[in-house]
Amino acid sequence: MLKYRKGEKNMIRTIQTKEISKIVEKLVIDTALYLRPDVLRFYKKAMQNETNEQAKFVLNNLIENAKLAKKNKVPYCQDTGMEIIYCEIGQDVHIAGGSLEKALNKGVQTASKKAYLRQSVVKDPIQRENTKTNTPALTHYKIVPGTKLKLSCIAKGFGSENKGQVKMLNPTASIQTIQDTILEIIENAGANACPPFLVGVGLGGTMDKACELAKEALLLPLGKRHKKIHLAQLENDLVKAANKLNIGPLGFGGKTTVMDIKIKEYATHIAGLPVAVNIGCHAVRTKTIIY
Image (tube, rainbow, N blue to C red; front, side, top):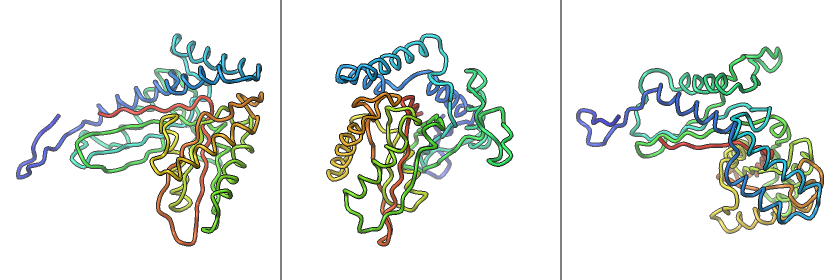
């Protein structure tokens, strides 16, 4: 609903929280059931380029798995993940009808029940009592110009999440050192993180900001290079080097260890160079809706 506020020339858009819950419900269900189209295209192309027969066999099964998940409306992977919700809220948007945080979690909870998603969230990291609702989700907010609401979801399984790392390098670290650091993390992830990977890399900021950037990078489309030439070159070099590790699909060898490596960067302190790596497994599940 659009309306003017008295005394203001700018248009203010009001969005009800119940609408937001419905959007999140769809986001969560779609990420669990339907493989990203660019990822599916990658698998089909990788099948043509692979020479390792075991790798081709695994890729073929990943494609078939995606088809069956879509046809039968069942999760693509049994670990349906912990939901991470990104909200880009236009500064001329007014959220009405209750708490935005509660609306987001209600959407996750409803989707988990409707799609029979595995209950994977515990209330306390030590006591480990299951919430039985897949909530709370992890939520991130950003205020941007305009009257749109952009909601993105990452369903993050922990086979891959457990293999992410952050390194605090010296500010004098060379490009080669940065590349070696990232490749070491990918190699250590190995078969345990269910390759082929979509790898997110966060450079700069602080320790926590680098980790945030690395996770957000998983939302980026495959194949599109960074707008900064030196970072685009680093992405290309990393992909080539990673695919020479011979880890391959699900660890069976071959030249398809990563689908892509995406970099997001931020300004940082003169005395540091944070580097974070977040591993997305072959079932990398993300979706964005602009409302």
